[in-house]
Image (cartoon, rainbow over all chains, first blue to last red; front, side, top):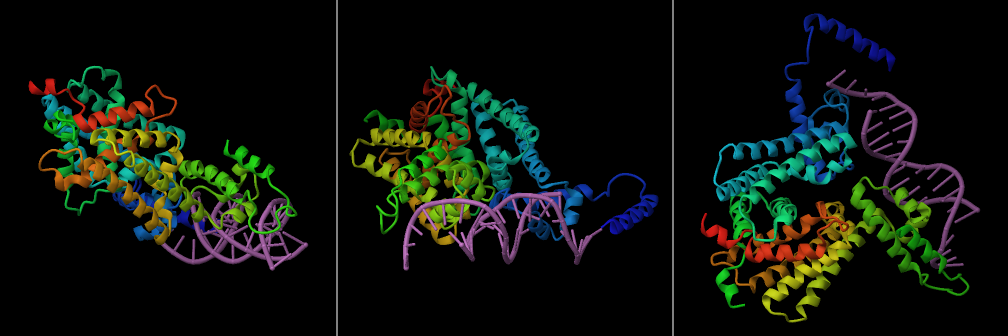
Length: 220
Length: 220
DNA sequence: CCTACCGATCGGTAGG
DNA sequence: CCTACCGATCGGTAGG
């Protein structure tokens, strides 16, 4: 109602005298808290199936207050996906800056990604299955960053001297590697007997040497 | 288009006078047409975001008529996922019945799965991202069949004599293989320069031998 | 920071 | 008493 809105404006004017500029110092912290509650909600209900009321309840706040921190459902989605892919880019940059030999570089990259994945299962599912709900410009921002990550992996794989004749298959081979690590979100559990760290080694071994003993293959 | 296919089904209907009792002979054909329209809709909008009105429009029928063929949205979802995983089980059985030597059996399995994937992109996405929306009993039916497929792959991988010390990692290694082929749904396009058939060979090669030349690795 | 609401659309069903 | 089918609208709930 306009009466309530008017009253709210007057209260804001009064507060403006005491706190003349900027957002509350806790504003960004609140947004982070909302984001961390939103990621698992979007992951398990799907973006379309998750409601803002449900999110507000999960955060212990009202829906109008939720809209005070985020202008809309899509902005939440963008921040989750964009923030997550930013962290992945950062990991590739940090590993690159260590100037490791090719195979060590490769293994470290897999290891650091699995370490990140272990604590970002919800964000990863949102990135994989909900980015399509973003409007074009936001979606393209996220997808461009995804391509940056893929390109860096492809570059590192290129330094490993892949088998002859596979140079034009650089991208498919890179995507096969991503399949190996990204598919863990459908089956690997942090509380299981096989750890994310174990998986990093197994994936690196299979990608570099295959899953089958060369000795047994000599007789086949 | 599936909408056209559905309309074609309707044109072949006989009148009530000719078919006095039971379901219309085209009833199952109509259901199949609806299913084929629903799969891409669920895949791109997500189960929660896809509406029954939209589906009815895509099929060229009214919503009440849609409900004549399917009692609810969830039944559609179940039929898509269940029918698809049934086909995957059938593929494993057909390949097994050929009694091929281990490596040929393995390569044939990958090849046949990629061949199926090429024409079932929507169904696969529904299976991966929408099965969680099913009620417990239907979801467990589908998940049990998924496990059957995984078990058969694990069995075949077991015949390949994997590297020593990896026997307790049979399931993780199998899931890594599924990652390699299933992740294609996020990036491989049927109209691209790399075909699904190409991918089958590349995946088999990497899984069996690794992506990197053993010769180059001797010097690392 | 809340209750109270809106325009629209949801999944599903009424009468005929 | 059955299936096939439509225009209109139900009770609730979505995002805002």
